[in-house]
Length: 74
Image 1 (tube, rainbow, N blue to C red):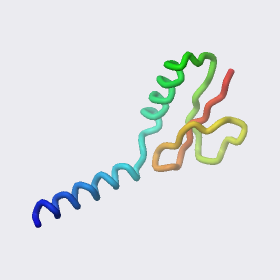
Image 2: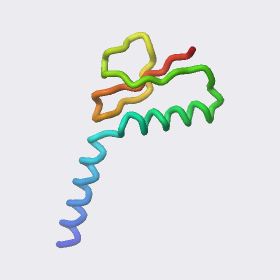
Image 3: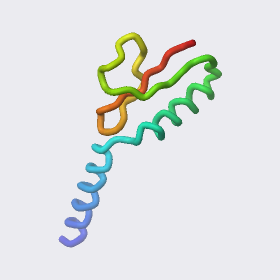
Image 4: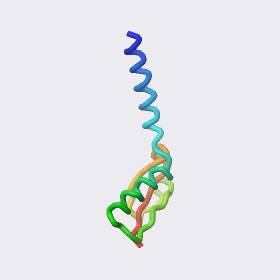
Protein backbone atom coordinates (compact mmCIF):
# COMPACT_ATOMS: atom_id res chain seq x y z
CA UNK A 1 0.00 0.00 0.00
CA UNK A 2 2.87 2.38 0.78
CA UNK A 3 4.39 1.79 -2.66
CA UNK A 4 1.05 2.54 -4.29
CA UNK A 5 0.71 5.82 -2.38
CA UNK A 6 4.28 6.77 -3.28
CA UNK A 7 3.59 6.06 -6.96
CA UNK A 8 0.40 8.17 -6.88
CA UNK A 9 2.30 11.02 -5.21
CA UNK A 10 5.10 10.94 -7.77
CA UNK A 11 2.67 10.84 -10.69
CA UNK A 12 0.72 13.80 -9.34
CA UNK A 13 3.92 15.84 -9.02
CA UNK A 14 4.94 14.90 -12.57
CA UNK A 15 1.54 15.97 -13.87
CA UNK A 16 1.90 19.34 -12.17
CA UNK A 17 5.31 19.86 -13.73
CA UNK A 18 4.00 19.03 -17.20
CA UNK A 19 1.03 21.37 -16.77
CA UNK A 20 3.41 24.24 -15.97
CA UNK A 21 4.91 24.04 -19.46
CA UNK A 22 8.45 24.65 -20.60
CA UNK A 23 10.23 27.95 -20.19
CA UNK A 24 10.03 29.89 -23.45
CA UNK A 25 13.77 30.29 -23.99
CA UNK A 26 14.34 26.54 -23.53
CA UNK A 27 11.64 25.64 -26.06
CA UNK A 28 12.81 28.33 -28.48
CA UNK A 29 16.34 26.88 -28.34
CA UNK A 30 15.01 23.37 -29.06
CA UNK A 31 12.98 24.58 -32.05
CA UNK A 32 15.97 26.57 -33.33
CA UNK A 33 18.19 23.47 -33.11
CA UNK A 34 15.66 21.38 -35.05
CA UNK A 35 15.36 24.02 -37.78
CA UNK A 36 19.14 24.28 -38.13
CA UNK A 37 19.45 20.48 -38.26
CA UNK A 38 17.07 20.48 -41.22
CA UNK A 39 19.23 23.08 -42.97
CA UNK A 40 16.73 25.92 -42.62
CA UNK A 41 18.32 29.35 -42.96
CA UNK A 42 17.13 32.94 -42.87
CA UNK A 43 14.32 32.79 -40.32
CA UNK A 44 13.33 34.36 -37.01
CA UNK A 45 11.76 32.87 -33.91
CA UNK A 46 10.01 35.25 -31.54
CA UNK A 47 8.26 34.78 -28.17
CA UNK A 48 4.96 36.69 -28.04
CA UNK A 49 1.81 36.78 -25.91
CA UNK A 50 -0.72 34.15 -26.94
CA UNK A 51 -3.02 35.37 -29.70
CA UNK A 52 -1.19 38.65 -30.27
CA UNK A 53 0.29 37.78 -33.69
CA UNK A 54 -1.78 36.57 -36.63
CA UNK A 55 0.57 37.03 -39.59
CA UNK A 56 3.25 34.52 -38.49
CA UNK A 57 3.22 30.75 -38.01
CA UNK A 58 2.93 29.53 -34.40
CA UNK A 59 5.48 26.74 -33.83
CA UNK A 60 5.16 26.27 -30.07
CA UNK A 61 3.52 27.34 -26.83
CA UNK A 62 5.22 27.89 -23.50
CA UNK A 63 4.82 29.35 -20.01
CA UNK A 64 1.72 27.21 -19.32
CA UNK A 65 0.12 28.25 -22.62
CA UNK A 66 0.30 32.02 -22.03
CA UNK A 67 3.01 32.63 -24.64
CA UNK A 68 3.63 31.43 -28.19
CA UNK A 69 6.74 31.03 -30.28
CA UNK A 70 6.22 32.27 -33.82
CA UNK A 71 8.27 31.53 -36.93
CA UNK A 72 8.83 33.83 -39.87
CA UNK A 73 11.01 33.27 -42.91
CA UNK A 74 13.09 36.20 -43.82
